Image (cartoon, rainbow over all chains, first blue to last red; front, side):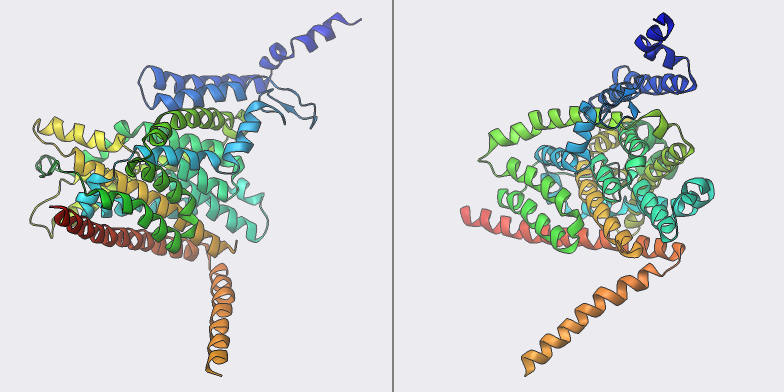
Length: 410
Length: 71
């Protein structure tokens, strides 16, 4: 009996770590460690970054031979591995983003927006980054990643560039579920890891990314502009009608946005109807917590070294950051443009809250306002812009799917 | 007669919209496809949110009327 062969077989994981693939595994462990560090030490969206980081560790464990396919894969990712089951059950069929939106909808109070509806336009202006980055990606992908594009054939080349560019652009929406929804719709499974990691990690880095962009585009005088707000809540009938009307309008005009808008608004109706407090609380707590755990782990599980340690990952992460910066800039500049025509000036920082990262972006804006003037309170206006950003990003996602689908003939 | 003519005409319009427009878009160059998506996408977002804005204004009126009626 060959004892050495037996030992090699028995400790195949240890042997694997000594190979080139093992080095890649160590790099992925380091990346996962950074995500977990940011979650625990820096408190950057720990509910997401921690499961993502841990999912990445699980997905990069030394492979075993899959009993069904015969291919090597980490035991959690084989054809019957629990992370594969979760991926097929929740990401591939877009279920997790939908469930998360029900939870988010139940958490959102649209009252500030219903009282100051003009803020809704910031939710549109801050989607500028999506389209600017989309154009930039269309130019960069064929030039920076010719090998990737060369793998596709004929008209599929253009289709791949357009689909990939649209998913990269959507990262700027700062809206993880919508980003997953678009990437999934365009069958970009291979790029799911960098796209979702960029979307969720930049979302958690809003306090780091937005302030320098806002400071660069505004003067101190502009940042200290005060705005009035009355504490009175919007009429109950308006709060109940809002989710129903928005769902109907979005579903009629942009049918591709209906699953996301519908689930967000369903969650909100649970909250506002006043007769389903138990369900509303369940959506806000148990549902949100459960899906966040499963979503985070599953996203982390897509970070397999072979799919992640590539040049296109760097491009996606870089362009995702650009999209975030453009979105922030778009909102701030739009507010400055509006101020040219208004008597009661708007604090232009509020425009930056038009991205979808709710409620983090609104909090960041309030914190910045307070740093400039301790008695300036613009949280409610920022929240109005922030919830508008949530709506704007979903609509933008639906429109991108529809328009790109039309131009590539899907 | 008029009904049949109308249904034929609407059918022709639908067929034309279904075939001509998409094939025309598919034939565009990559930069043009990008521009079409960008322009219509941005306009679309503003248009849909404008509709939301109008609907909020209407809801505000309904809410105010209801509250006045209660008082």
